[in-house]
Image: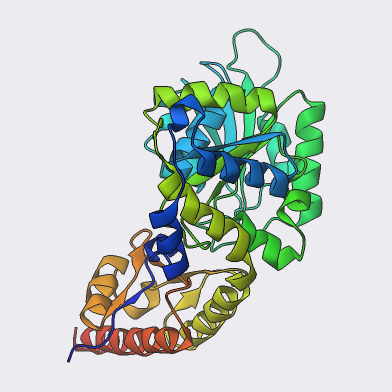
Length: 353
């Protein structure tokens, strides 16, 4: 009998809960393009309430939500300031340029947290022959920095100073409920000063699909236009929104378990000779450097899969593991053991060379 598979590639791999499946089967539906799907309408209204916003819109993916937000906030030919490893720049198919006609102005931050001191020098001067800055885009938690969380005072200062400079701020809050859990604050307080927020239902909250974009009513009215132009009119989408409502209302309370499992995983990996865990594990993401064991991330992920553990290579030297509701403490322990075996194999091979 083969060992159980521990899938740590992402928190997107979760399966819907039995309660979600029942809600999906029983969902009241209508045509959402006409605004007539009652379950979608209820999800959007509830999301707006939770985030303290005027309105929200349900979209198929976080990428679509971010793409729409950039389009509403900017005009072609402008620059968007974001962190160098940001999802909006690296993993969204260059939609900043393709759909909005904008250029990314990236800034490197060791922990993924952009401060106003780092941003300010890169705001374009008001000179007609320079591309103008149109938007500041932040990410909380920061995925590729290891799930790092913006300290509230830093986030608020960036928003305040950007607004003083006449710039809107969009938050890629794909995992904002993880950040709010760490900060011990409701998401409305954590995100209050951003002009728009995108958050995912399909990551730590465990829904099978979907994200939401929240903002002012005028912003969301325009977002609805761009959602349609991107092919996001989903018709009887209440079957998806039904699972999203359960994710939104019930799943944030269990994120502390994912964070505790990630810390356990990080501590176990840090004790393996040759591995280096990047930063402090704050939420449900663990990033570690494998260069010291003489293997590439690709080779290590392949070998881990042979031991029933799935992980994601970020680049040649770094691997990411993400805890979620379908991974318990025992599964994390199995992952640590598998990494120990694979690292030992790499060190023996290196000695033979």
